[in-house]
Length: 462
Picture 1 (cartoon, rainbow, N blue to C red):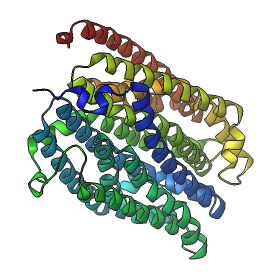
Picture 2 (picture 1 turned 90 degrees about the horizontal axis):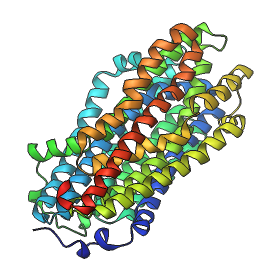
Picture 3 (picture 1 turned 60 degrees about the horizontal axis):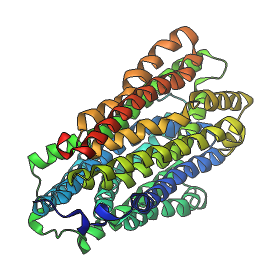
């Protein structure tokens, strides 16, 4: 027996209003987290120089790997929760929520333990150089402590949004970011801890965010009531959760692989160029943090649309699903165009945020920002389609769309082009991969609109 869509705002409130209600808090919290990552780099750039930025660039693959696990568990748990809630299966939704929270905690502790055990091999895999090894060790040893709390925060906030409390999810995420912004200069300059101070501010901020997100669950959810029996891992639910969240995992894990390949490519071909590997790694590290702002906006729209997609797809309200997808695509394209304009017109000004550097540093950074990020205006199409497929139970399709840019196109291009064009090959790999993946995403989305139109005419078509 399906729940009447009129009993839940996700089923009757205007789609545009719902997207604003759910997306704005998600974008705000994501943006603040992206901004505090940028400010980390600003303090490091001004206090240590681009050697410090290069050191955090080496650690970035671990950060994206943790994000991959967090997003997989969060999206998977929230999508499964909303799909069952929309279909009227409240008892199962309760079990799914409890199972998801248990798996998040277990995964966080496991990943932290593995990172400690394989610390040195990970550094070598990520492309560390002797010049920045001491700084990288100091930073990464502390960042590892925050892994369980990051997974719990991100994963739980997805569930909190799915429960209809996007504002609390925003507060939870933003609390750690605000803590970080305040204590970065205190720990780094006031206490004289250097790059360790930046890492401690990050780890402690993650602990604060996790505490707030968990407190929402402890106080009681809006749509269901969890009991002690709910918090029990179940293999069948965990499998479903991972399948629904696999596209988010694949997208982030692909970023991990790309960062590993990119770091090692930049290390090798940077040494062969007149720039040098440290200059190249530092420049790309700074720009990657700028890119997190763009990704945060896309992800915020996706996070806001996820409960709308899942609930209405489960309730077979396909007209609302189509309307949500159309608006998500429009929002993402508009965001992409705005960032494209800034990257092309003000590259030197953007790079200057991270402090002073040599002429070679600014020469490479400006060129990289303009060329590698050239297709920014189209990146949001892939992001919107990935969230759509994962939120409506098409895990395999969502995973494939996630794979197109990073794994299928970008990594091979990063491995092949530099053999012929040196460091320029790595620079041009980005826009080529973006162009092909955006084209495929447009084809998939167009086909999906056709299916939704048929389903609106005949609900049994899907």
